[in-house]
Length: 194
Image 1 (cartoon, rainbow, N blue to C red):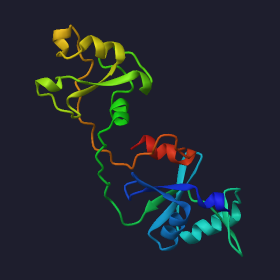
Image 2 (image 1 turned 90 degrees about the vertical axis):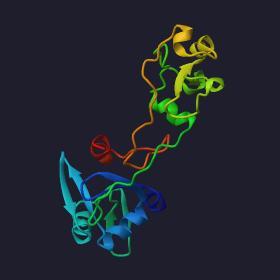
Image 3 (image 1 turned 60 degrees about the vertical axis):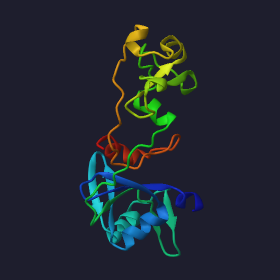
């Protein structure tokens, strides 16, 4: 049972947009306080169930992924639909190496080749000694070779062109999963539409 309680559930707002990822105990609390309902998917169709309906469904459709009480077993909810919340939490993407590499798809913005993070650098498009800032709009992902070739010059001075002008990524309406976290198969439909 301890392993089941460490699992997570995806939370959607009333517009069916992902807003959070929570633990199973928190999911049960939201369901039984009537702040959320369970969304169960079956062959591409979705069924929204209250706490009572979910308990009845759990009794009639046993699963290995369930929490056992003294009298019954309740299936672990994978996706919840909030009953009162319409908004999306706005989170700005943190400015760091990893997010810059992700923004640029681990692609050198000069030669267009894809690399691992270990083989990439961050290039100031307008060099710092010429007033270039360390911002989303002035940093581009570059491979070691291109970064050395460009050196402390503007791209056109080095005979190079940017594939894409660097820009601040859009605000994310969803809490980002950290690297290595598993996405449950029941989440995929909702994650793709976000």
